[in-house]
Length: 185
Ligand SMILES: [Zn+2]
Image (cartoon, rainbow, N blue to C red):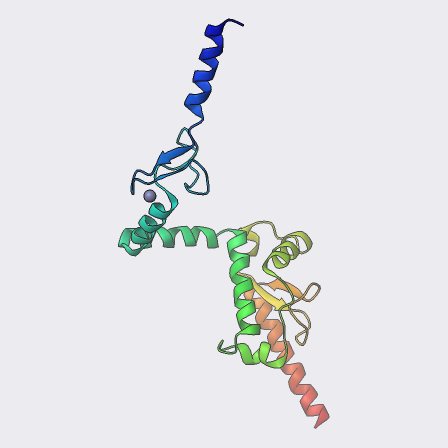
């Protein structure tokens, strides 16, 4: 190998291994790493030009503005229109009913010993893998229902019903309970 070639390779390598870069906002010299800069495929080094601290504070300010608030609401709405978003919201309501004494429906759930035995992940897996709901459209508008009204939110005891089915189930449950009370009395 001639000395000329060797120098050229070295030069190219040195040019690309830059270890620090200057944040375009605060001017700090920081290591070129995803620890200090958010990833952004648009840029050559795959990172944003401003550091994480600057970007976070900009985002915070942006979310306080009317435009920022609207963008956030839009993003939330898009998320809740996906099956993941929908299941997360069902799960969070279920947890509130079972675990938050301040929830106005707690007395009918946690208050009488009904527990939520799912984690968010196991709930999502159960609904998609076992109950077979794959898309938002399939589950939209359906209500979660415990098959045994005295059982927990747990595998084998939940299903999703359309509002009219749900009403019918609960109407029947009420009349059975009423009949039982009548018989026992
Ligand atoms: Zn910065």
